[in-house]
Length: 285
Image 1 (cartoon, rainbow, N blue to C red):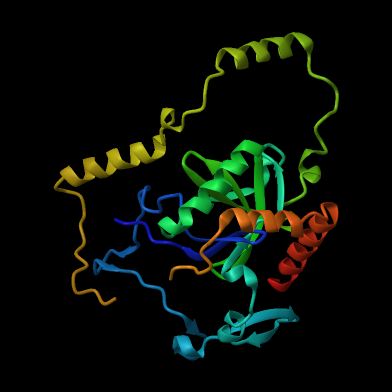
Image 2: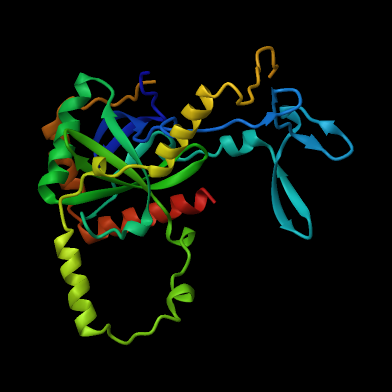
């Protein structure tokens, strides 16, 4: 099955705009999933939106409720929320660059692939990819996707660019309340030496293919055994109701040179970019 883009727009580096698509890097169907079945009838259990004393309701009768205290909610029409205009709905601008190892792993959320939409975009795409690789940097920007403005890290990977959504600082729990009870005394030297030797002995290049999801493997074995067993209960549910971005780069070298001229403010430009990113975060709240 062909991959479906989850976002379409432009990746922007100063005055250089590259039409791109973003695709999820993970497969949602890679793991076993189950449906809930009503045993007496063999039909699927469905979930309906209901109101106490009213019963099932229509989707156009549902509004967004923001709790303001005391079981009181301020009502917002979903269309009002969708109408919020953010530049990051169609543009992923690289506003800052950091060292490849500067971002703590705790901040990384989900990976995506960024691909150029057509051959005309590939030249500029390759320049950004190779520049990031040569500089050893990760680009930071923000992007609105699926009803949320995400902080994103973009880095060169193989022949392309990979984007990873990041958690905002206020989305992470403080570690101190959990770690404060751990003593600060140094570890026993002899035990530390043995542990270090074990680590060195088991050190090898990372290869995810060397690891297997044992639970998934055992679950598949159970399902296969149950499938072959004629005594296994079965249920039949048949009859159960139930754009390309714009702004192709015409003259890439001219655009890059013009970008250098407009960004020669250095620290001042970086501060403005950071401020812009902050204001974008507030808008999304």
